[in-house]
Length: 303
Image (cartoon, rainbow, N blue to C red):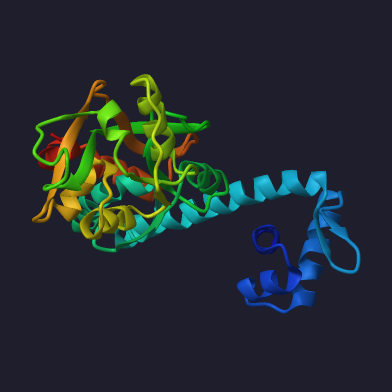
């Protein structure tokens, strides 16, 4: 019975509202409230700060919630292990990926599902901070993010490829016929860049500073496809992760030119919680990925 009560607490922590938490658990609000009160009785501590409405968890409740999420993840892992022994690997793998890495995700998921047809996958585009929170709250199984720039804490990592940078610009523009472009030159163009909350933008800003300059973008967005569209339809240029060209390619009328001075890269890889045992689906993905050469698959785009 305590597992169900922990599920009630996890839902309340996630939803921040008794009614929504009850709906998420498919029970009535009085049932959920009574279950959490029983959990308080068992543990001998107050978990919820109560008034006329839900006001959050007590300090003890916050700690209990941390344990509840961990226990529920282990229970899911138990069912998954036993089920895999009898029926083969199944279940849903939840991946959070920084936007600049999304072009590599199909390489991983295609190989995983080919080996384990019973596995389903959910991929969410998130920034690095959201990935860290998702892993810590057990709402994500693995993340795909930067390993050597603002690295996440409490995780293990597996490098996949080096992120390289290109200037995406119109072929008939002032630099469109160049073999390489210096970062200082790129800073003088009308640019569309990712927004400051994106780790890629913070990396790009740092490289511009290393080159002794600072970009002054006229358009900022959290969407890579929006960057792409502005270059295609307007007079803008964009600094982009070259791996995206694995998906989008370079259309007629546009050029993707390597950025140099400095010619720098960042490591992109998988991250997952540093805990034992590793969840079964996470292990399955890692086993598949270790047989892949993601760098080589992206090489036409990142070279």
